[in-house]
Length: 406
Image (cartoon, rainbow, N blue to C red; front, side, top):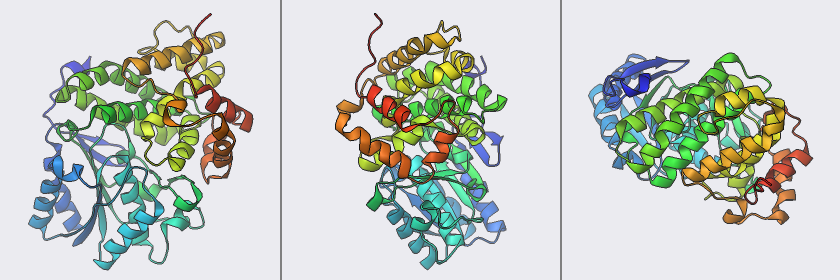
């Protein structure tokens, strides 16, 4: 297969609506990116990131060097936390506006990228707030240019038009999708991902798997989203165990980064449905919950509910982690158990009860699914009706391991 022989150090240019650079050493492309920003008349940028990884990985040094060479000033906002809030987006944008920032550079995984994209909207639309964006009282058509240096292999947000933020006071975690949010340039450098913790290594790649399971089975899925789903899951199945065992394995990180990138492209085409719609209330209520862990706990039950409607596609894309599926509706529970067993095999066996959720929480979670802006749209493209009863059933099945085969 191509992944066993490709030169990891030959930086490849991957074009979607974003120009993405993939390969060990791709961070050096920051020099070319800064020159391109300068040629566009950009003299000041806002850098949006978390508290540590942007420095630990060395990404920050490259940004500072590249921008200094072009005479571009940098304003740093490094207070993004997991599951970013609209308040933090407003803070970042206010800081950038005060400095006259004309572009955003986001460094990190999904949270800094989402916050950076959101701040880019506000910089291009003075007078608006993140609260308005995520309550859908303001529908933006423009954002300042966005550059992403991706530090995880899960989000896919470096090549698509999606972003997420939590409206803290409401426990709402909506998703937005606008064409103005496609990054201008992105960097996927596997060498920047080797310092991910074992837990985050697992969670981010499980996020990528969820992206493609949903994108391949929604009612708007297309042949591209299905094709990308199959390759994403193949790569994650092959390389996630290697990355867990040997964190410095650059081939494993390269293949997982590419899997996440094409997973992001898949859901740009096929959209998302149940696992993301139901996970957002979990991490809105419990902001310390890792997004990928929340998805992992829900995925087997989602497979169980959706399999009868899309057995052929699911059998095809799940083959690397659940071999032997025939693509018939009656094997839904077999497929769901197989996914649950695979998750446990890569060290993620937790269920909702392990994270403090119980039967008493299901009604509140269902309410949040119904009331959070945008989640109804996700449910509307699910392969089976997203009724309250089905949502409750998925949460209930996710409290504990699925029943063993009789």
